[in-house]
Amino acid sequence: MESTLQLEIVTPDKVVVSQPVDYIGIPGVGGEFGILPHHVPLLSALAIGRLYFRTGDKTENVFISGGFVEVSGNTITILAESAELAEDIDAARAQAALERAQARLDSAADDVDMTRAQLALQRAVSRLNIVGSM
Ligand code: ATP
Image (cartoon, rainbow, N blue to C red; front, side):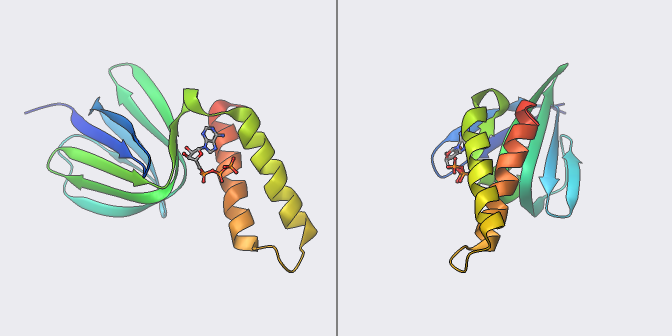
């Protein structure tokens, strides 16, 4: 039996990861959970946060901003609205997004969509956490 599972992380724009891995830690809407090879079939919703995967003794971090995870056969597919490997996160851009979102939330103006600003803030904070800038 294979000791790895195939991880596919896909966004509307691109395939971010496509490789065999040993283990995946996933930010689910109900909390973090892990997937090992030969997991039972699963369909679940994703939160905004850090996903990580291990291959041998190497661990890689990936930002994901919601979507769905499906485990089927020995493949795990992450369909995310956006996703970036840690090394591809632009910290300055995330910092600017954080400040924009914070200013919108602080203004409490009538035309500000608070939910949208909260989600933008969460994405920015999570990206900065992953690159270690917070
Ligand atoms: P921004 O306001 O800076 O666009 P956002 O959180 O609204 O941030 P998203 O809607 O999550 O951005 O993503 C839009 C696209 O831009 C996606 O392809 C995403 O991967 C990319 N992206 C957004 N922020 C960053 C970042 N800080 N570093 C690298 N790529 C990013």
